[in-house]
Image 1: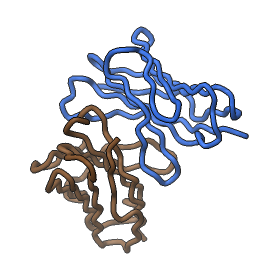
Image 2 (image 1 turned 180 degrees about the vertical axis):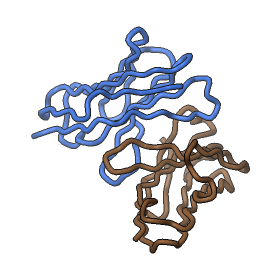
Image 3 (image 1 turned 90 degrees about the vertical axis):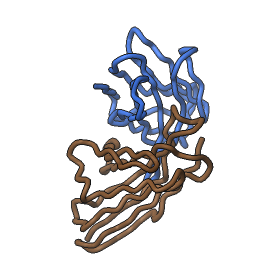
Length: 116
Length: 115
C-alpha cells in the first residue's frame, strides 16, 4: 500500500485559535486527497475531497470557511481548523488516492485535536 | 446513493476459531468494495478489495472476503483468529462510476479475540 503521514499526531489548543494539520503522501503522487473526521466509537465522516491544484469539494453540512483545505501539490494537503471550538475536538484522518492506485484510498495515522 | 450495513456492533471469538465480520451494501451499478481495520488511535489500514474478477478475494494478514452479488454481501473472514486481530473493522463501498472515488463506510464492527 501507500505510505501516508500526518502531522501533528496530537494537538491541544485553546478555543479561538487556528490549527493546521498536514497530510503527506510519501511514496506516490496523490491526485486526490480526502479528509475525514471520526468521533469516538463511530464511523468516518467525509468532510471534503480535493484534487491537486483545485478547490476542495465539501460535503453537505461542512463549513468551508471553518475547515480550510489546501491541496498544494501531489504529495501534500493541509486542513486548517479556523477559530477552533471545543465541538471541533475530534480525530481527523486524511486519505490519498491516485496514480496507479486510483481504486484504493490509503489512510494516514490520524490527528487527535483537542480544543480547550 | 450508496450505503453499507455492518449488522454487528461487536463480534467475540476465541483465538484459533474462525472469524466472520458481516457486510451488506447498496450501490448503483457495479460496486467497489473494501475492508479496512483500525487499531486504537490509529488511521485505517487497507485489508483487501473487490473490484472485479474472482468473487473470493484474499488480502493481508490471512483475511479474505467473498463478494456475493445476489445477496449484496461482502463478508470478511479469517479461518483462525489471533488475539492481535482484535480491532475495529470497517466495510466500505463506492460506485464504480464515481469519478471522485468517494467511499461510504459502514458503522464498524469491533472484533474481540480472547485467548
